[in-house]
Amino acid sequence: MPFFKNIFGFKKSSDNDNNTLLSSEVKHINEELYKKGAELAERNKTLSLLQRINEVILSSIIHPEQIARLVTSLLVTNIDFQVVSIYLYEKENEKLQRLACSQIGKNGEMISDSQLPAYYYSEIPATDINNMIVQSITSKKMQTNTTLVNVIYSNTGNDPELQNPENIKSVFIYPFLVRNEVIGALVVGLKDTEQNLSEYRRDLLNRLAEVIGIGMDNAMLYNKVQATNQKLIELDKLKNEFVSVASHELRTPMTAIRSYLWMALNDKGGPLTEKQRYYVERGYNSADRLIRLVNDMLNISRIESGRISIELKSVDLIKLTQDVVEEVLPRANELGVSVVVQKPEALPLVLADSDKIKEVFFNLIGNSLKFTPKGGTITISYSQVGGFIETKITDTGAGIEPQDISKLFQKFGLLPGSYITNQTVAIGTGLGLYICRSIINLHHGQIHAASPGRGKGATFIFTLKIFEDSDLQNIKKEGNDDKEKVELIHMSV
Image 1 (cartoon, rainbow, N blue to C red):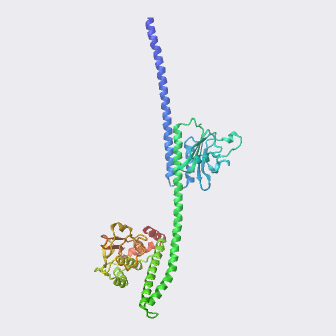
Image 2 (cartoon, one colour):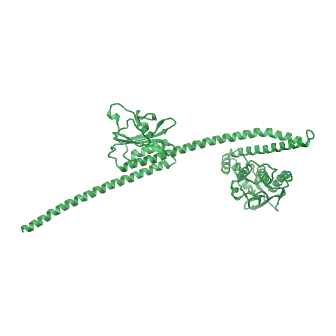
Image 3 (cartoon, rainbow, N blue to C red):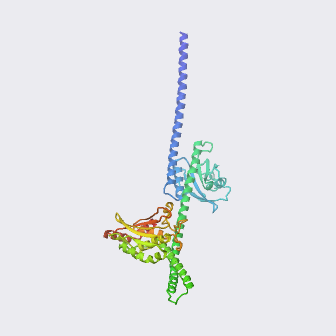
């Protein structure tokens, strides 16, 4: 019996030990699970916070001050940061400018910039080598401290409560480094000591400094680009005004010079010798070319400033073409180039400004004359495509390489290496096709070019809407709104 008692007694003691051990293991597992759960919850909370910060940075907010205020507020209200302050480094002014500072007060309330005590720095001279933020941006490294004194506010005397009113035990200062340049700094104050800070929390601080720094840089770059664009717009406006004034001032004397040269060529002041006529003819041609250039520049100025207008009405396109051909025929005959108009049996009227479309014809036919050799032909034809009339001007001239087609209709769009087979004609400015495109776009039409290749001629095609009373009334109604007209011009140009 004692034997069994000992055996049973031994077993009973062993069971108690096992139960104690098991209970301890379960307790340890529960504690670890709790820690892991708490850590996971903290990580999820942090990831959510980082996402919200990213949303702020990637949102339509473009001012660094706004971003800084929102970010500092988010950090102190959503995570156990007691103080968060963001500074911008103004290198040219040699100072750190506070953009925002948020902190948790003694009663748990959030204190923002407007409520901060007077001893908080609004700006810090970059020459203040005793300040920890200055040390951080100078060394381009993270700095730590145990107080906010000489970080975001000045020494406030011997009062311990004033020395550290938030009971901060660790302060982390991170420089914002973008492209190895310092653009600012992040200051975070915590109630935990630096030694008690987990690696995870340190990693979070590093990530915050990177994300916020990139966001601040993007905002500053955006504002810089916007300021540059505004300056360019103002300069472009001044340029247009100068071109307009200069064109007006140049056109008047050049017109007078051309008129007097024309009178001399027509023997209004008496007969000219052969040498005199040679000189006067070249002077007349040069003056005529310069006047055309001035007119082109004036048209460009009007188009880009939204001051061009069109007077739409029903237009007989064939009659308009014949008027243009009669004017260019003397020049075409002089160059030995035939101009042929293929008249259809019937062609609907088009909705157009006759003067502006004449200018398109003059530019396109004149362009073909430049590149069509003696004995060549320029053919003008028409076809109806849906509700539009398509006009084609085809020449047997130098042609255009396929890769150069896309370069046409641009301002100063001269093609490099163009083959000019008609050497007696001077090269233009590259503005004619640009003006043509602008005019046709104002008519709600389209213009483009085609060519089989070099030496095989080229075709320029533009469309105009067939005239209808209802369309005319609608377009006139739209034309009364100058803003819409300007938008249309800028969109088309």
